[in-house]
Figure 1 (cartoon, rainbow, N blue to C red):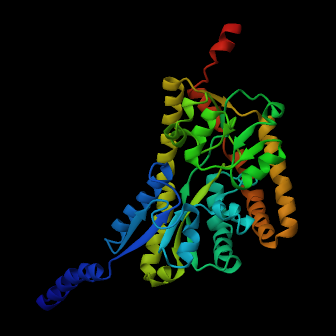
Figure 2: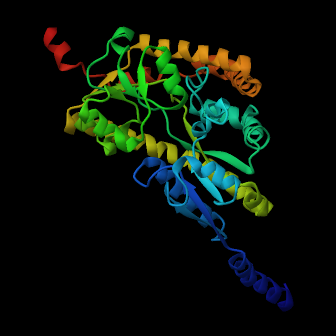
Figure 3: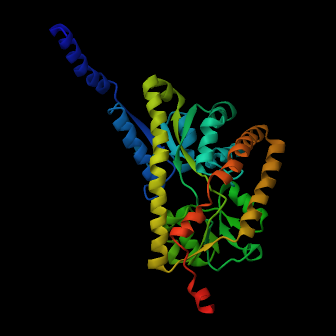
Length: 371
């Protein structure tokens, strides 16, 4: 190589970082949650990875709920460019269009899908194209979104007394939100909507008999174990709940094609890297609940889970009859699930099969005494 070529190459190596520094930008983005919940960790993880993978060209100023706008107004604020973007979850927008819940996974998977199946539908089954259509064509918002926040499987909830069947369940007053509250009402539950910070005081006053939050680490932090000792798992109401990173469309278009691809990759990495971290935290929290706080972690009666799925099927049928876009999305999910879910039933051994082989379940003390 000639000396002149070496000099040119050296100059390029010096000027590339300088150019990146000149175009560096900081995006003002707000979450729909406080910094005390695990979802905030995902937001921070994403921001840190975006900073590193773009060599500092794209930074995110991570703001907690309420710092600029109220928690449930981040979508509209991003549309109006009050915010450059947001970290949230689409079922907060069911008041605008009920199909919103389907882009979070939705009750039942839907149709038996697990988290990987749902992500598969999103990227291999036409889901992301419907996601874009939902925001830009149906809601007519100036935004673009990507799945990035896996927060499932979530626990069924906390109860002041044991529940053995649907009869025990009916008539209880429980904190539930969104479309799940509608489903639970069909099952005979009296529901009340309230922010997370109000749940424990309401339980202490006896205003509510039960509540659903997230499970594991988040529930431990909120203090459920201080008022109730019956914690039921699993649930089918949020078995694939997935949050999102949202960008204002003008902000998105201002990214170079390379930076757009980096953002997509970071969103996927935040999903795949953070999910196992979250699941480990949930397992550790459940262990602490039992060993330090005397919480009884019990299996949700199958009769109740089946009743929930049946009630959700009713909602699907009724909403599909009057909401063409809802029908379009749920049909797409059903088509995808009809291929992958039956196959995985045979391809994958039941999780409990090998789990019970290596880690046999301990019989509850009461049952052991009886035998």
